Image 1 (cartoon, rainbow, N blue to C red):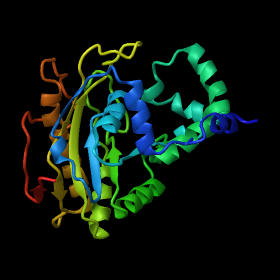
Image 2: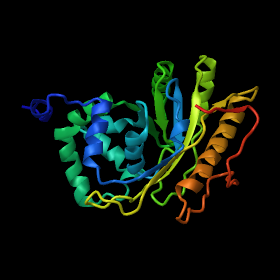
Image 3: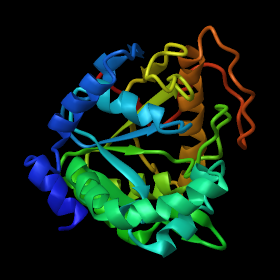
Image 4: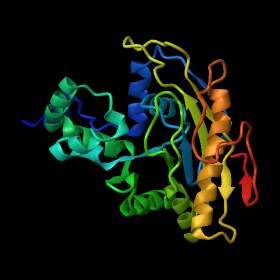
Length: 287
């Protein structure tokens, strides 16, 4: 009997829907306290692309627990193939696994061979979109097939979480946003998708102890949804502008997410703001 068959025998509802997963996580993390601001800004319907800073797994948990509608996540395709050795060799090259020690590196592929199929079924059932791919020249980026999958879900009025840094920094110093977010917005505009961009920021890295109790109270801050238009810009001009604009929007929300803590100095290109900024061809919406 395979591991997946055994899990299904023990837990007939497996793989769990997003609603059921949320209920399980709320019970499992019932000791966790956290603060959410701006929840009223989250559109209750329609296609939404949520962009936020990435520091680890904790913000994903906060989004699952707090978002008042189903969400889908964009992630590295190799996470769907943990039962393959090549996936682990690629994952170990990413910043997500840079602190994994030699013993764990030896054990994880073994676990993957037995649990990889189950993980794959659960991720797909939850709403995982495998879009990030790797290359020696560009590193991790959103691949063409992934862009088509994201646009297909946006056409179906889904809310998708995108981490435009395509990497993470546990200390909270954002990596530069990748221009793929501009391509997605341009393609959505060309397809007539009424896309809303929801900026969001969080401070949550290391907020939990091994006993699943608070080390500090994490915070998630939603901004107002935006409608962005190319407005005659070339593709390169728009992609460069929108990545800088959205990263500044996220950083302005980080000021509130990090209130009471020393926010890290940001070093991404073009960083210059401390408050929310507006610009031409940007429409602010109240959800």
